[in-house]
Image 1: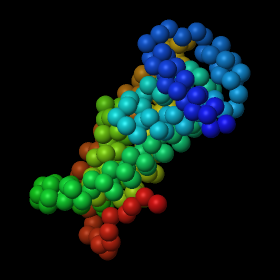
Image 2: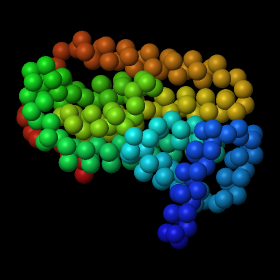
Image 3: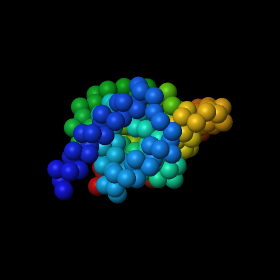
Image 4: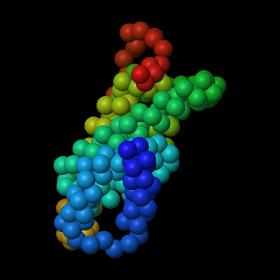
Length: 220
């Protein structure tokens, strides 16, 4: 069974690349093919999604492909689960291996001020940045891990902040194959504007003095 799943994962990488560059048949037909592959296909797809996007691989490629392969609810929910797993793994690995190496950089007063803000209220910054499509998924994972943002803020903010853009991307992916993309495009733009507003609000809000000074939380 393990070999079978590994085979699916290898095949899926080829399918995702093909979906990004080749014209696809009607979504209903593609979903019919996906359903005929059995229940292991969604697991293999989103498992591959969660592993590959730990590296600096565009998350949007998998998201748009999921929009073609699966119904909207499955595509959106599976994408968000895979997003949370990939972000958690990337955050955990980089924090354990690289956080201590950037202590000197964080000692700079200007960077230290930003780092303190992220440590005490990182959820708003992370959630806002996740809503801006121009911010690369993997780069934000690595940068957050090198900062002092808490994991208990990072993960919920990642999932919740990614949700609006994910839904818009799923709708856009479907619209690109069926026509009528304007609504999905406007939704994507609207969420990006909200994300930018969140960044501005976060920069203007004062940061309260910390109640305690416990160590930077590690993912468990």
